[in-house]
Length: 327
Ligand SMILES: Nc1ncnc2c1ncn2[C@@H]1O[C@H](COP(=O)(O)OP(=O)(O)OP(=O)(O)O)[C@@H](O)[C@H]1O
Image (cartoon, rainbow, N blue to C red; front, side, top):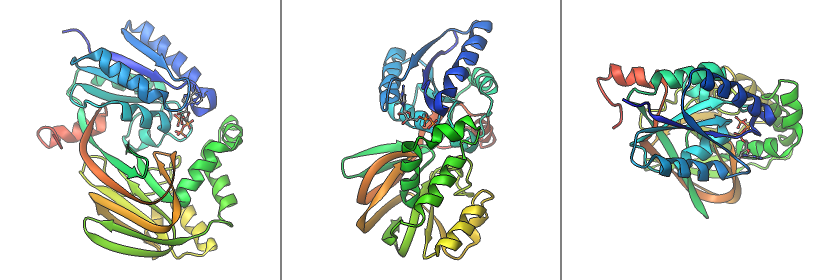
């Protein structure tokens, strides 16, 4: 049996250019192992989605692997270009600054280890993982990590905009850009009332900082925003932080790296499959750390088993359950 074809979609600019070197090391290993593959390189925002579509088309109906090499933004874009989940397995090699996808799906952090895991799983039947879909005025998107509304979306927008990401990355402190932006924006952010409905249950939150809807626990480069989120349980986990002074928000923030923030009374966590939000002011929105714009309402849905993923962790679980988890 011929090995499945692997299409790599590489964002050489991820991790502030670090990903170029990540790819070179992967390429070298592929040559050593005489693996046949095809590689495409992204030129600008949105390109990875187009390239993933192209790769899926090239695969025709055959079983193939589309592997994103980059950061969470690249994973997000590639995922959005894979329309047919049945014959395409999604794989990932971390080359970005945050790399929450690798954490959440327990993929090796080191690129060569991640490649070896991909090659090791290549001929197995890939696991099924959930996605979320977010619809706001102007369009809808799939997300694999989380979608956020409010302050966290503003932080991810500013973190991507400032030249600071480059500076922090050069100091190997990629994660700290979020801390820097958060501290800077904290003082001027205006909190409003947000209504969140999850599976028919309506909650009203005053003075809301943010609402995050998670498919897996990690966000913003290692913050354990949703410790209980499981990427193949068919549900999404909602975390709301509201009615909190700036000082207490900082305490919550410090505890989010250990996931202990959920014990604060101002932090609410619940689950849902069909979620909607509504607010009077416009709110900033992100999906997987990619800024989508501002909207005062939107819908978020769990899409159980939407994507097939090469992940040892999920595969093991599938086997334990005696087959496909969410087929
Ligand atoms: N050639 C390119 N030049 C500039 N930007 C690009 C290019 N290719 C892709 N992009 C954009 O770069 C952005 C960042 O990519 P990505 O999220 O993968 O890396 P990162 O920000 O370093 O990592 P992370 O999201 O894990 O912190 C994405 O919005 C993507 O659309």
